[in-house]
Length: 149
Ligand SMILES: Nc1ncnc2c1ncn2[C@@H]1O[C@H](COP(=O)(O)OP(=O)(O)OP(=O)(O)O)[C@@H](O)[C@H]1O
Ligand SMILES: [Mg+2]
Image (cartoon, rainbow, N blue to C red; front, top):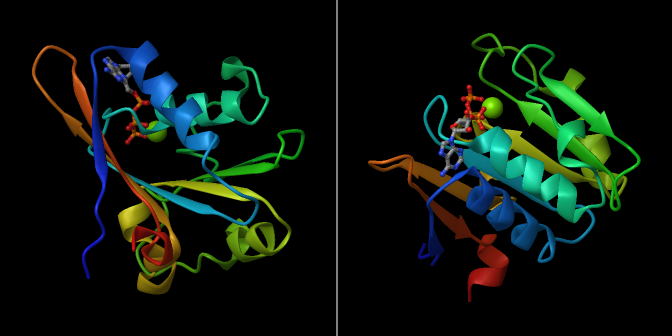
């Protein structure tokens, strides 16, 4: 299926944060965002901008690498920030509460989103971050299939 995306060049961290803020303005309660990109690509940085767009202070967003999921009920809509990097192979995603959050009108942002089951990947906004020379990141945002036309 063709899912056209738009790519933005982000020359520094501030620009990646801005890309996250802009994405926030396009999202609705119950939307899932799957972030893809290598270690240190800037997934957490982009979610910082997303959080800002949902009314959080950037400092309130930290990496869920070790805790796997961080709940931000005070965001509007509320935000669940998930990181699948350290989820053991074959482990259930159930305890992370993604389903409940989506049903409850949360926005759910998932780092290492390529590890989500296929049905969730299809439903998700995909954010693909590529490392370029000189600290540049290319950020491609692909809307869910239903919106791609
Ligand atoms: N253009 C840029 N956009 C985003 N981050 C940048 C940029 N240039 C440099 N950086 C730096 O790259 C790092 C990105 O770290 P971040 O934790 O967001 O990566 P990540 O993709 O979440 O990694 P992980 O897979 O470990 O979770 C930060 O230290 C940030 O300051
Ligand atoms: Mg991260």
